[in-house]
Structures are given as C-alpha cells and as structure tokens.
Amino acid sequence: MDFLKSLVPAVISGEGPIEHGGALPKDTGPRLLRMKRLGLLVMGHTIDEDPVDPMMEVDPGIGSSRPARNGARLKASAPVSSSVSRRRAPTSVTPLSWEKHNIAAMSSITIDPELKPGEFVIKSLFAEFAVLAEKKIEMVMAEPLEKPLSRSLQRGEDAQFDQLISSMSSIAEHCLPSLLRTLFDWYRRQSGTEDESYEYRPRSSTKSKGDEQHRDKDYLLERRDLAIDFIFCLVSVEVLKQIPLHPVPDVLVHEVLNLAFKHFKHKEGYCGPNTGNVHIIADLYAEVIGVLTQSKFQAVRKKFITELKELRQKEQSPYVVQSIISLIMGMKFFRVKMYPVEDFEASFQFMQECAQYFLEVKDKDIKHALAGLFVEILIPVAAAVKNEVNVPCLKNFVEMLYQTTFDLSSRKKHSLALYPLVTCLLCVSQKQFFLNNWHIFLQNCLSHLKMPSNNSIRKQIETLQVSYLASVTCP
View 1 (cartoon, rainbow, N blue to C red):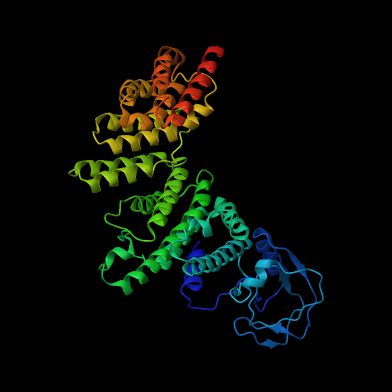
View 2 (cartoon, rainbow, N blue to C red; view 1 turned 120 degrees about the vertical axis):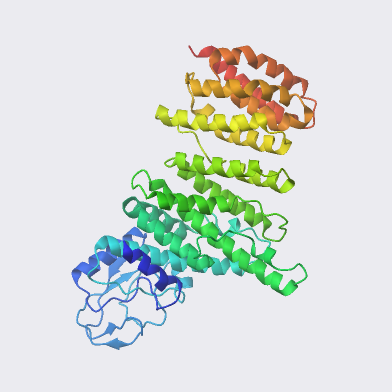
C-alpha cells in the first residue's frame, strides 16, 4: 500500500505540517466521522461529540476560523495542536495526563475523506508512532550518557506507547509487508542509512581519540542511533509475530536478517559510555531473530551458517573469536518448535551442525558460548517434554555431545560452563540412556560440592533428582 510509504516523508522529514487527531478536512460527513472513530478506538482513545458553533470551522494547517459547512465535530482524547483554537462544550471529562504534556508536541493529520477505513486506521497509527518515537528519542538524548536505554525505553515504561505497538501488531495481521516497508523507511530516514550497503559502526570510533569535542558529540549521536534501533526492535518483535497469518516477501525477510546480523558483529577496540547500550541492542536484535525463527527458520539457519563459515575461514585472532561469540549469542532466543515433527527435526538438525562445531573447536571461550546456547535452547525442550521423545535426531544429538561434554566438565576450567549442559542432555535423553548415566554424573557433582561455586552444582543435583523421579515414575 503506497499510502504507507507516502506518510513517512511527511512525518519524519518535516516537509509538511503533521498533526494527529486534530483538524478535519472540509468534508466532515458521517463516513469520515465513522473512520475517525474507528482509528481512535484502535489506538485506545475515548470518543465523544460535543456541539460546536455551526458558523465556525478550523482551517487545517493554519489555525484560522471560517464559516463552517457542517456542524459536526469529533473530539477525542488524542493530543491536539495548541495552535488551533477550538470552542468546547462544558464537559466533566478530565484530560489524561499524557494529553497535558504532549499538547504542544502533537499536530493533526488531514485525512482524505475518500480513504478506506482501513487505510485511515493504518495512517493514523503510524503517524502517532512516528511522533511518539521522536519524543522518546529526544527524551533519551537529554539523559546522561551513562543511563542505560532500557530504563527509559523498555516495555512497561510507557503504557501508551506499548498499546500503540500492540495495535500495530494487530493491524500487521492484514498488511504486514506494507507496514514492514514503512517501518524500514522510518528507520533509514531517522538513522541516515538509506544506503543498503551501510554497515553499522559506532560513531565514536570514527574520530581520533584526542578530539574531545567531536568525540562527545559522536557519543551523543551514537546514543540517538541506539535509541532508534531500540524502538525499531520493539516494533519488529511484535509485528513479525504475524508472519504466519500474513506471509511477507523473501526480500523483506532478508532485509530484517541483514540488519540484525550487522549488529551481531564485534566492534573491535570500541570503548565508550554506550558500550552497555550496544550490548542491549544486540540482545534486542537477537530477540527479533528469535521471533523470525518461528516462521522463517530455514532463512535464519542459512544466514547463521553462512556467517559462521566466513568467520571460521579467517585466521584465528582475538577479534575473530569475539566475533564468533557475538554471532553465537545472536541465536540465544531461538526456540525449538515442538510440532509439527518436521519442524522439530529441522531444529535438531541445526543443533547437530552446531554440536559438530562444538566438538571441533579448540578455543575455550567459543566452547563455553556454544554450551550456553545449547542450554538456552534445551531448557524449554526439557520443560515441555512430558514423556520420552523417541525422535532419532534428538537421540543422535544427545549421544553426539554427551560423552565429550561429560569428560570436559570434570576439568576445573570447564566445569561451571559445562555442568548445566550435561544436565540438560540427560533431561532430554531417552529413559534408558538417562538411567545408565545419571548416577555417574551425580557422583561427579557431589565430589565438587566443596568448590566456591557450589550453588550451581546444587542446582544440577536438584534437576537430576527431579528428572530421575520423572523417569522412574513414567511408564
């Protein structure tokens, strides 16, 4: 839908006055009023009508008054421009708190009376998103650089913005490709990355260390870039959940993948006040990938394997090791689909590919990162499995990893990282395999209880006990 893309320049680039929820076009017939009610209800606003002077009408864009052709006017709890004078009938309704603070910032959109109701709703939603997002970006720019972005932008901090994103998710069920394209247009214009070959790099790394004035400015601009990424990820996580209901072209899927994996690249030599925020954004893009794997798993798998293969071909160095670890952590929100069985098997075939790399790699840190990834993925599987899973791919995965992992866990440098993995492998294994091996691992755990980090070992023992009770009581 081209009207979505046409909205972005007007909202973002400042080419024209944009107002939300305010001025009506000249034709204020019953059909347009119904469309406005629909849009405002979707955004969670309340609606009522009050009489207005039939001789007065607001002129959109300039705030002047002139004789009206229609006496009906719509009033809602959406913010309106302070530059537009309106006469209101006496009412007992108290404005919402966010209305009081946002009146000067919000403007009104002139809606074409010939638009379909659905188009009106989507344009209204995205217009409000663009305005609220800009306010949030300005807010975090005014905060200290040391303050994590998650404290200001995370879910639950702003009920109005959360509700708006939820509404966009609902609308995406009917127009996901158009909404995604518009979201990417907004992202590119905000971050100045219209060039598709753009590769994310922290701004502060582009200046010399001695240039204090430019460096401080770059830190601030970098914080703005990260805030844009934060908001983009929040929306992407919600709207991409609708892919099973409204498939999207592969080109859009690859665009999401390329953007996410660019943020998984290790930033060599970067050290600044935004370091923590860079990691937060990487985690958010990992969450985006986690949502995408539920409907586009093969595309995600292919992208991950390709990126990993490229890094493995490079000569090993601290930078390459950290890049591989960052790439691995980008998959930590991947979850195995338990049904249908074809998807379950495809997930564990991917796990076997990762397991083969785990057995081959020599670097300790990469092994520990892979072990952590396996634990993140296997815990939900172990929790969901009520009875023995007799699927060859899972059985092969457990047998492929168990003995090597168990042997390594007895070494002090590997014990903390690999004990949870051994426990998870036993919990998802077949009954006879578990009964043959659990007591050996239990003895190993008991022998290490005197270690300073014995809290982790106690957790493994408790998990083994629960799994044992389940295995002996299940038929």
